[in-house]
Image (tube, rainbow, N blue to C red):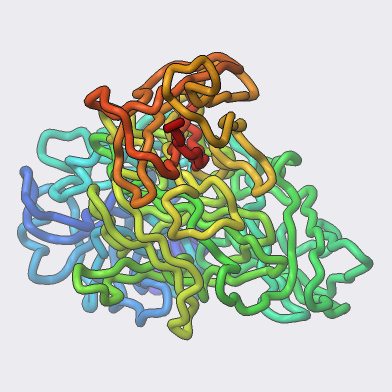
Length: 575
C-alpha cells in the first residue's frame, strides 16, 4: 500500500517536472527583462554585468539546462535547477558576482557568462532542447538618455508581454540605484505592440537567394508561406525560411535566377509580426537586384555635417550617381590625417545592403540623433558607423573607398565654404550643388538652406541644381569705356538678371594680375533685375591705370545658393 503511495507521489512529481519543461518550450514564456551591459561608473549596484529573466507564463518553469548565448559564439554553461514561479524573476551572473547580486533578489550563476558589449549586442536565452526562448538585440540608442548610456544604468523592458518590440519597448532604468535586479522594472507599464512591421530592404545574396529584412521580428511560422512573397518579372519562389534568433529576416530560395544589371520589385503581403500586426502596406515592397562592383565616381560625397549642434553628431551623405546596384558592405568611409595619409576608416554597412542608382545613404555614429535634429524622409537610408571617422570643424577630408582600397571620391572641405553671411555655422550642413561637377571644387558646395532645416539627410539637397541650371546672368557694357567725363561711355554698366528678387551681391574689381582695386558692392540686396556702375576709380577714388580689369561678382540667394561670375572690361582714355 505504502509502495503504491510512493509510486503515485513519484509519478506526480515527475509529471510536475515534465510539465515545467513542457511549458518552458513555449517561446517568450521566459524573457530577458533587464540587463546591465556597462556597470561603470557604478550608481548603486555592484560593478558587474548581469541580466534578469522573468516568467511571463501562468506556470512555474524549471530553469535547469537553460543557457545564454551570443550569436556566433559558444553558449554559457547550463543553469542550475530553479523553479521560476509565474510573474517572478531571477538574476543571472557569473559565479564571482553571485554573492553580491544575491543581495538584490534570487540569483543564479552560469559558467562562461557572455560578455555584454557596452554599445550593443545580441543575447539570447536558449531552452534545454535548443529552442530559442527570447533574444534581445540591444544598442546604445535604447537608453534614450546620453548620460545613462555612459554607464552605471540598466536597460529595462517596459512591457514583458511585448517581447519583440526592441527599441520601442526598452529604456534606461529610472531607479535611483541604476536598476531593479530581482524586482519589477522601474519602467514597467502597458506598452502593447500596435505597430505594423515594415520591409526595410531586399538583398540578392546570389542569383537564386534573396534575403528580406524587416524592422521587427516576424511570426516565424507564418513567415514561411511562400505565397506571401512575390518578385516582378515572373521570378518564382520555391521556399521561405526565417533567419533564426531575431526572425526579422527571411531568406527566399528562388526557382528562377535573377538577371544581372536588372532592377526587380519584391512585395510582401499578409506576413504579421510576432504580436500579430499585419505588414504595413505602405512599406511592403522594395527594389532588388544583383550587385556590381563600384568604381571611381560611382559613389560620391553629397552632403556633410562636420560642425554639429549641441548634443549632435557628424554625418556624411553619399549618393549613387552610377547606373549600378552597389553593395554598401564593400564601401568604406575614411578621413585623412594632417600629413595627408588615409586615417580612420569604417565600413558603411556591417553586412550586404544595396544602394540603387539615384539613392542616398547617410552615415553617422548615431542616426537617431540625426533623425531628431533634421527631417529624415527615408529612415532606411540611415547607417550606423561604430567607428565613424572624425571630421574637424575647421577643415578636413572625407574619403570614399571600395574594399580594395581604391578611392572612389574625396572631399577636402573647409568651414569657409559656408555661406559668407552666416554668423553661426554650427549645425549647418554643406551641400553639393551638382552631382557631375568636381567634388573638390569650392564652387560646387554651399550651406544647406534655412527653409530645409539646414540639412537634408536622405533627401535631395536644398541647393541641388543640374549643370545646365543657372542662378542668373551678369553682363557688362560697354566692354571698353573711357572714364574721362566727356559724356561718352564714361562708366561701365554691370547689369544683372535673376529669377527672383532676394539675391545678395558682392562685386570686386580686380586688375589683370588678380589684385583687388575696388570693392564696388558688399552684401547688397538685389531685385530681380537692375544695374550697377563702375566709374573707373579705385578704393582711394583715384583713376585706375589703362588696361583690362576683371569684374568679380559673387551672388547669394536668401536660401544660400551661390554663384560666381567673372566679366572683363577694358579702361581707355583720350589723349
